[in-house]
Amino acid sequence: MTAPHVRRATQNDVEALVHLRGLMIEAMGTDPGGPDAQWRKNARGWYAEQLEQPGSFAAYVVDDPTAGVVANAVGHVNQHPPGPKDPTTLRGHLYNVSTEPAFRRRGLARLCVVALVDWFRDETAVGVVELNASPDGLALYEQLGFVTSRYPALRLYL
Image (cartoon, rainbow, N blue to C red; front, side, top):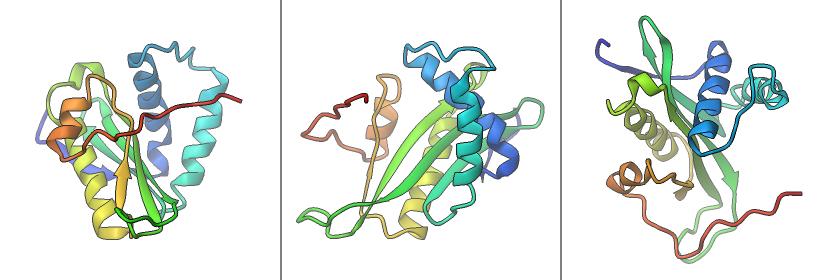
């Protein structure tokens, strides 16, 4: 691979974003289903919609001249009430960091995450960026200054 180039995702990247999300889901221990899985169809529409909201959504990708998009990181700006440690009303959520298996351990995810953090810092009014880390990604996030929250993330599926 030549020198990696990070860029902001466009509508032309929707299929790659869905594909990389599937890889991330699989890496986290869940079967993503085949190419016709309903979630993939829903995700295509969702990404296309979100990419039209550049002030509150961003995805950064790395292109390989032969393989195409091989890594990404995605983020959202969400409204949040202010508090003593974060007086802002906006919070960032970083997610869907994924790299094609053949391109891992080359710093490509780091490039995408750094670009996304730069976007949060330079182009939004976000005061805090949150994420859920996989064991494989934890060291990367800690190296970039993320700290473990005192409160664990919990989920309720409805």
